[in-house]
Each structure stands twice: as structure tokens, then as C-alpha cells.
Length: 557
Image 1 (cartoon, rainbow, N blue to C red):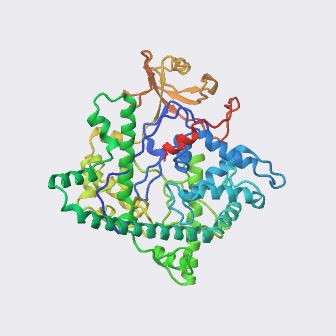
Image 2 (tube, rainbow, N blue to C red):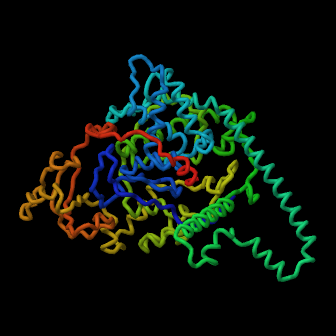
Image 3 (cartoon, one colour):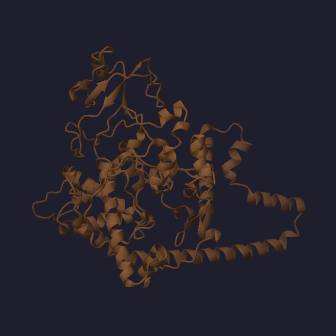
């Protein structure tokens, strides 16, 4: 299947980092150049990138998009902790360590930086399977998968790859059952769809037999009624001007659900008849050979094994990169997974022997970053000179931005599950082109495209504001900020801004009273190993499941 590249890019709204404490980025630190916290984005799939302080929301929301309460996720992990009855010798069961492992194993069910693994689907219970295998195999694994106390050591010592290999191969042992059940579910649904279509055709024939008996106006009215939205959806707004607020809210909710259903049906390849014939037939004899031939263009035992080892190397590197990105910092600005498809869980043999070493590299400048992730339809977001690199057929990187490209939906039910087959961005070619355009940028555009100092903004009533008084306009010497100066635990180096700072886009006022905001340059203190965990003085709330939890869950479906 091919699609015309006219869609706008996916966007993500970032929230202020008010509450999450397991991260070195602290409250009230705003970065004038956020790109230093973003992946270089050499893959041109239009995916959102996430800064470090949204790590908690990303993990929980992407893993359990239907559950509204983070406390419930922690309860699930805590239950897992209690069910590990036979830990290895010299290994105590620690809740915080299991949280680290839980976050890591969820990467196998999907993340923004590695392609989907065909073995695991969240809607098929992948998270349950991962947790059950983890509990069952914990003793055989020999301990935890992740050790964040070793995050600063070389060669990814913080990830026990030999244990990860044992774990994922244990998951792979369920592949045959998973693929068989998936195939049966698919066939059963298609048969039911065919049956429903046949019933609908019979009803149309029966309706046509009686159509001549009806008055023409009545017939037209009937057609309108059949095509109209659910009457309950519009009845309050149309027929009852004095409807109560509660009725309007219910009416709006019904309309929202109806729109959601319509959009879902429109993207349903089964119902539209646009689905591709499943040539891979996962779970049937020879499916791996067919998969490698179709997705990696290799066949024959020797070539397949060679490609498998290459995939294992790159996928393992990806797991290490993602884990380090979420827990610590960017391991490399230039690394990317060089395939459109992921491996089978059962094919990850040899992970324990993989040696991981990254080249740090440097991040793209902001405009280069946008050029590497935006589609041509969003060229208006770039300066004119840069946009022409996308639109002008004479551009030397015009091939990076195809108007038409393949979307592989084989074996998929919904269009949004398809894989965009786009070529990789060659960073050297891209940077070579943009380097020649720097002089064509306006002064404002050049400033936006530069790396600037981080800024710290605080209210004048804050404890931190008292420290600003020691900064001198005459000497402009930096001032050391001790952690104990602030209840927020912020430490670092402060210096006066040498330029006017405009009002930030974030509304940091509580609208209760007028308050001025002070701004200084801020330099992070020397880095140190950060081990995720609860703060020493944290007060844990009482554990309970809300009485209306079932209703909340259903409402979010």
C-alpha cells in the first residue's frame, strides 16, 4: 500500500516538570535550547521525541494508556514483588529495583526509538506476559536486569545482557501460541465480517421490495433518518433548548464516542476491504524465512543467520541507548537503528555476547533537527531558504522528502499500525546543505538556531531569589548555588543574563497575586551517578483502589 505524503507531523505537548523527582533535571529549569535533550532523529518516522523530565509520564502512559492513576501501576508492580517467592541467593527483593526492571521490559512492547517487535502486542496482553515471565524466571535469571548504580561505567555495565537474553528467550517460547491465537482471532473476525455483510445485503434487498409502497417523501425521510447520527446525540440540542447542563454534557460525550467510532471504522482495513493478504503467516512452518525475505530482503540459511546477528547487535544497542536515555543522558547523538522492522523474541540469541560502545557525537542544530523529522507539508514551519531544501526538485537532498511512500500494512488491521518505508536521513549530506544557508537566516532565526545557555526563572518571593542579590553587574562573576539554599534541592552555577529575556510561553503564575519573575543563566553542577528512587523524606500515601475504578477504566476505553 502507498500513501500520499500530505499529513501534518505528530506533535506532543510537554507538561511542566512539577512533581517527578527521580531525574537530574529539576523544577523551574527551562532550556533555551531543548534540542540538547532530544534524539538526533535520523529516522524520518514522524515520532515525538521526549525530554528527560517527561520520562515518568511517557513510560506509564505509553504502557497503560487506559489506566488513569499512576498509583495503580505501582500497585501492579508491588504485587509482582510480593509474588517473587524464591529469589536467587544473595539477592533480596527490592521494590525500586523491580520498578527499574519493569520499565525496561516494557521497552520490548514498544517505544519511540525501536521498531515494533512482532511477538508482542499490548492489546493482546503483552504486559501481563512480560510480568508473568519475569516473576516465573526471576530465580533462573540470577537477579535483576538493570543496575542503575553502575550507570557511569563503560560497556553498558548497568544492563545485565546475559540475564536479558535469558528473559526475552523465555518470552519467545510463547511465540507459537501467540501467533496461533492471533491468526485464529483474525480469521474468526473476518468470517464474522463476511457474515454481517451478507446479512446487510439481504436487508437491503428486502427493503427495496417494499420501497415502491412508500410515498416518495416518506422514503426520503427514512433515508435521512438512517443516515443521520444517533438521535440521542442531537435530540437535546435540537429539540430541547432548555436542556440541563448534565444533559448537554452527556450529549457531548455521546457525540464524541460516535466520532471516535466513525474514525476507528474508517481506519479499519478489514471493514474497508483494503487489508493486504498475509503472506508471512506467522506461526506456520517457514514463517521466519518468509519474514526475513519480505522485510530484510535475505533468504537462505547462511544469509538469514548473518542478518539475524546484525539485527541482534543493533537491537541490543538500541535497548541500551533507550535505557540510558531515560535514566541518565543521551549515550550518542548519532546512533540509530538501521532497519524498519524488529526481531522476533526467539531470535535474540546472543545478546549476552554483544559489546556496546557508542560515539557521543553532537546534536543537530534546531533547524537541522526539524529538517530531519518534518514532512514537506510542514515546510512552512521553516525559514524560506530551508523549506526549499524540501520543495525544490533541484535540491541536493530532495530525495529525503518523497511525496509518495510505501506504508506496509501486511498483517495489520488498522492503517495507523502500518510501517512507513522511508529512507534514512544522511546527516552529513543534510548538514553540508544547511551550512551554506546560515547567511540567509534573519537575525532572529539565527538566534533561534543557536545553542544558548540554560536559564533559571524563579519568583521574586522564592528562597532562590535571595541568592540573586550577590550577583554584580560590574563584575558579573558567577555565583555558586548550594543545594541547601532551596527546598527544591537545586544546585549549580548562576550568572547574570547579558540580554533581555522575553516572557516565557509557560504560564508560571498561580493567578493569586502579582509577582515578578527573575531570570539568570544557570549551569548544571558536575554530573554524578543518579540512582532512581524515592526521596529520603517522602511520605507514601495510603494504598487503596477507588470505588469507581471500574467506571473510570470503562470510560477511558
